[in-house]
Image (cartoon, rainbow, N blue to C red; front, side):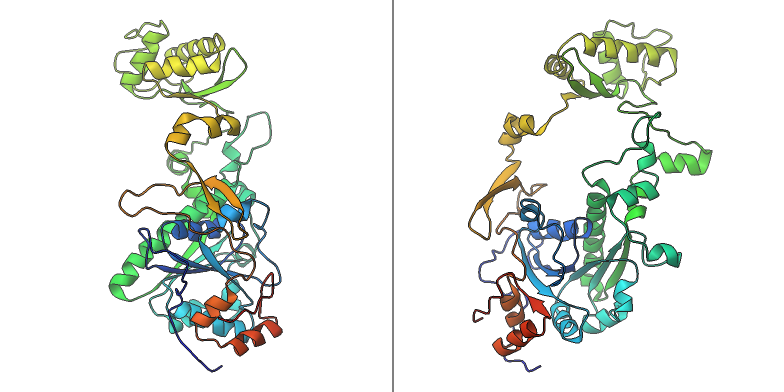
Length: 417
């Protein structure tokens, strides 16, 4: 293909320069939640993010509201990277990118001939993040297995610890494994970028979703590996410590509380009218174990106290003495709560169709280089012309890619670039 002009892939007149990741260029060929969440976080912190979408099978996240938040601040190209023409476009995209994220079954990109070594021929400093359910190596029958959020929770042992002992295990919704995986992908990719910028040498990261969920099990796995202890399902309260979990109140509504450490336990024990410093509840008690005389007494006292009053009153009284406690909030309560409003947890932005969309703000907040929402989620192939033009493709070449089905857009708009 001939090149009529060559400009930076970040050329976009409407994109503001902002955030801690200003100047970072990210390309991702991902779908659903886990891997795209990593790219989404980078987009909210100011990275220039280009989303490669399958032209034949658009991302399943394109529902009425989900895509607006999960793909905001991004530009998109609907591109078939499995064909030679698509591979040529990908090579130009990655030539001056910092990070490339892909999500597929293990080894899928290698089978396409898009190995790490090929990508590094295009860009030796490129950080590559492979996100899959079971990893890029290991037992072949598992590497090639499909996976989603609940599969990772189940295979990792995470699900086995959640729920009630007399019922089947419960998955943690919504999509905990997906979002954990996105966080691990984001942090590891940025760590690798830090090194790549210092050395000029790229990195390849193998993010296996089930391994993320093994890592996110506190000390439980370590206790089994070293002492053989297993953790069973115990509902909404800790089976180890008193005063830790969800308690039903007199009005039938729940509160969550957690009192841990000597000062808090002393305060709570005395507030409940129990004898602090006794043999069962000794001075300096750090935690009250379930199954011990003192722990069981304290747990019974907390349950009786909560059952005696409405949830709002329980939360207010315990907060008044410094014991961490809150009513278990639902969405109507959250969206009207003054603390959520005071911290601007929710924000409005303009969708690409001109509609006003409301969602969760950029979190966490940066004081000196804040993130922002500058754009709603793009439609399928909305930025094809702009991205390809920035890579040096002529109008006729772009038209040929449309004609061959290598790219597509929702409107098939061939406006001049």
